[in-house]
Length: 282
Image (cartoon, rainbow, N blue to C red; front, side, top):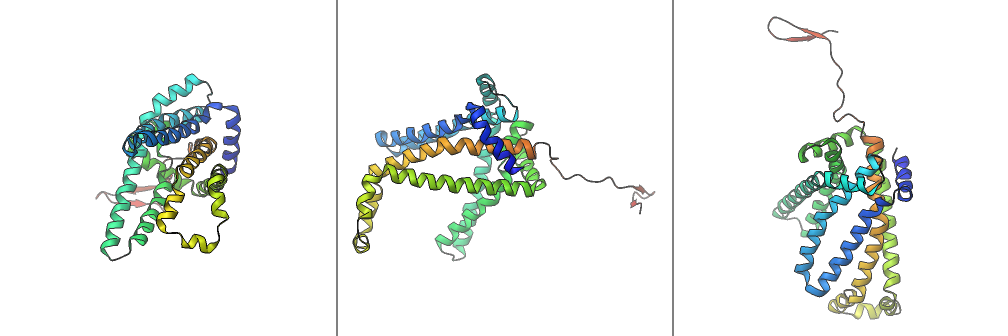
């Protein structure tokens, strides 16, 4: 199912152009935030970034709706975007807050036990993995089933547990796509920043080692490097964000939508005696 869902998602990128909207908005957000930070500073850029992040769930909801509902018109996209905005926003915020609280709590506990900051940080990051694994479909569940945030989170975990083998394959495909996106990002970034990086490639190892940390930091945080990185990130967002979002919706529709939210329980035959005790028939 995971491979069939990926094939369907790639086909929808051609059949339904509106599924590209999350990627286009993500690319716009990256470039706009960079534009704000260069003109008005980091505080204004942070505010703009938060506002854009709060808008993004509308594009997720619109894409989920036209994929699962098998629609393709812009009117349907807008309808699903309005209907599913808060249903996508709130579960994602709740999951984010749960991850933030748990990771910080774990970090503080490990630091109090005398563990180094780096090790504590890695453990706290590792804690995020099961949260993503079990709660990844909470926003779709809230939208499709009209669930409240915590019920949608629970429903996502139960459905993931029920379809564990296919879900594992789904995540492995996502990891493979992520690595492909990282490779393409690095290639595009290097190509855009070739004028700045070429002198570095011509330096000997001793020359690089002789540079101070301040010089290396200034070199790799130059405006040319940062602007090239933002451009490369925006290009990758246009390409890969629609793939991730559409693939998620296709997999949910194919593999998780019709699964029971809880494991089925067989009805056991028995009787109750006069004291209220239940006995199962053998």
